[in-house]
Length: 403
Ligand code: AMP
Ligand code: MG
Image (cartoon, rainbow, N blue to C red; front, side, top):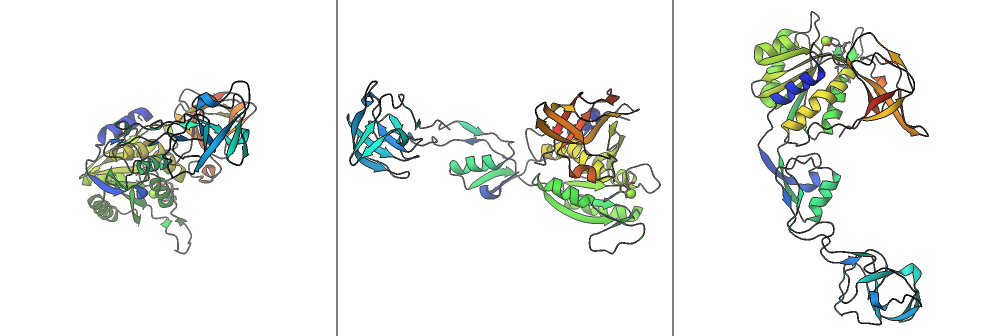
């Protein structure tokens, strides 16, 4: 048996990021990986502008002690500009986002003023110098590096690219990932249930997990536990895709043929990893295609995807921060004890209350019990040397985020 860290390190060391890039539309760039640095070609905001609806004026015109009346020389909505300079004794009615007129340095919010025809009353101490003005370039300065190559594009990066005027963006090409389920007992949705058969749910979990990674998914269906069929399917998959992910057939049973087949077609490592769930795992290559053989049990599929496959795919896709996870401590509102020392992930429900972060388990935790994931919003990480958890203990939790 090898440790979790060793298995993960071997996977990450074995994976070489792709080099090919493509230009795609920013509007459909979610979850793609930037292939070039993005440098700002102009300031944002492009001009000083008002942060509030109110009156643009000269700070020196506000009195420290008494109310003053200023002449309102016009009105400026967002999207327009005002050419005249604001002189002493004058104010311009201004809306949020409208550019500051020349001469004015401060905006007094509308709520504290009293308007009277062409005049406005400004109370004493109505604003500090420069109040309610957003400065040119305060978000971004021309020439600044705003997004780095290797960044995974999220909604905020899409918006940033758009505000820089980009309609197209240079990204690493999308990975092609094949998914295959193995097992004589599996039937596809639409097929009639029969004794001994179960519906194949792993391809659905994997499709969900892969969709949020932004890869192209090639669903190659189910393959029976027969050597020649598995061989043909794996060969086809490896010729068409960058990565093949299979589930089932990696244990030590008589019909667990996955490892044997991959070994004959390419090179595979098979590990018993000291973790629960997800103990058997294989990783290797068939030609230029990477291969992940995940266990068959649905919970094991999800956990080993999160722990091993996700970071591997992100690294291959060109992402810089491919191995990031958010772990924090919470108080256990459950107890457990066990005999074996290994890293274990329970499915948990994390909530925040008077006592801070508290976590409880989702009920039966067998790796075949997919239901244990349904109410879960986190994984509870039990360290190898932690033989028991009692209520009130601190445990590490990791929110389940599929992105
Ligand atoms: P295996 O590793 O092939 O022995 O599979 C372990 C367990 O997971 C068995 O109970 C299988 O029936 C189940 N299993 C394997 N593949 C799937 C699948 N695609 N969907 C649901 N359950 C599966
Ligand atoms: Mg099987």
